[in-house]
Length: 165
Image 1 (tube, one colour):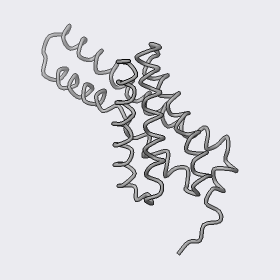
Image 2: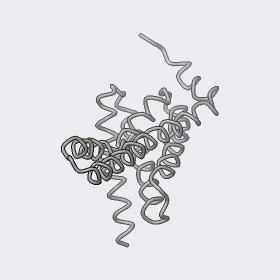
Image 3: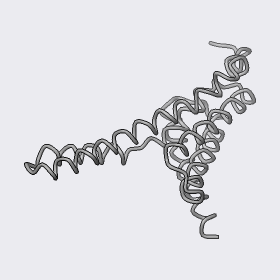
């Protein structure tokens, strides 16, 4: 029961963040609930893969990106919205800010120490955090773009019959 509550809590906070990122992306009001749903499902899928199944965060991010991409393609066609406008605000809550913070924290440790062993330790941790953060972002982007390209006819024609002003 406790794990289920943690998953729902994770989905709720990701949904709120998805709505926030969607609002600064100038989404129409009818797309907000779908953006929140996609963000919540994607983030909670990554949470489950990491905590319950023990998957590494990089591969869990790829799976979450694929889920967000697929859900965005399906939802974009249904509500006649561009797929990108649904997927990118849903991906943003999964950007690894903590890895970027630790990268710069360890960079400052590298610069401030004069001991070779401490420098190598800081440098190792800085490199690990930098590579992990970059790979997470790459996997999220690849996961979101692959369904758009795989279903390009469907995803790029979702807004074909909308009148533009």
